[in-house]
Amino acid sequence: MVKLRTAYASAAIGWVLVALMLAAQGTRAEIVPDLYAVSIPVSEQSTPELQRAAAAGLRELAVRISGRSDAARNPALSGLLASAARYLDQYRYERNTGTDTPWLAQLRFAPGPIDNALRGAGLPVWGNNRPALQVWLAVDDGKSRNFVDDNSPVAGALREQLRHRGLLAHFPHDFSGVAIDDVWQLDAAKIQDAVKIQNGAAHERADALLIGRINQMPNANWQGSWALNVSGKQFNAEGEGVSLSAYLAPTIDRIVDSFSPQYAVAANSAAEGIVLRITGVTSFDDYAAIVNYLRHLSLIKSASP
Image 1 (tube, rainbow, N blue to C red):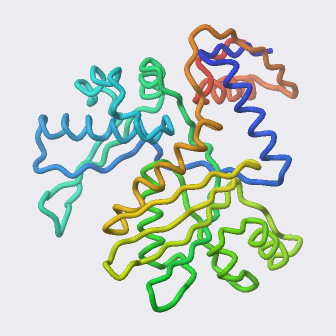
Image 2 (spheres, rainbow, N blue to C red):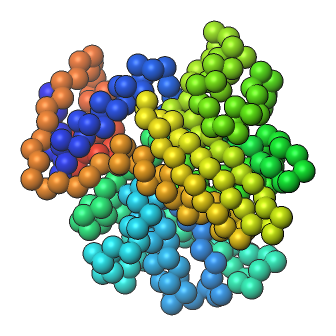
């Protein structure tokens, strides 16, 4: 038996229940790569610039790992930001062509210390096993209404915004059988039924279905509405902006903020541990691999056999 001691055991149980619910629905989660890596523009390769970049990177990670867009403004992070460089696992510089800042600092933070620091600041921690987002999006430019495919600049802008929040967007490659009016009406049931018929027995529902409609207005402003269906719940958001990025950033923040509490594990120092019984351990290598795996899960503080 392994006793799992966490600072938030009750929340960990909730996380396990969510994972089981997703498995029962035939859904799939995905491991988000490079969750603790950020790119920050810098003017030079100097220690002060590296420290500034590390603080900016830590602010971005606070939002990404906690699942909360207001995390970077948490007063408890102020002390951490002053020494953000000490949380770096590695860093390197790349040329940043075509911009006013000649370099990009590619920063990779150490996951364990970052998670512990966020917990110490009272923030939740959301691991790298995250819902797979299947995106159906329609855009109306005033002349025609069209699906957004994987190669669209709109898809690129949305993917970049979701990347900042630690989520991956998957756009359909085949639009046959799906009515654009159903996407425009944010009708999740009709889209899911159409995709199921389209794919037949091979259909596998994504963890989350993100449906959106965007208007590009005559004054060049953007506005639109979204519906996110995840784990049997629906979350909606609307927004407007003078540019595509100005529209997407706060709108996507509202969407992610609304559903991330289902996955991000909240800190709670008063909770007890739980006991997990693991069978089929036939060698010391098995034993070592299991303990090592458990100790590296973001929802587990320590694992003691």
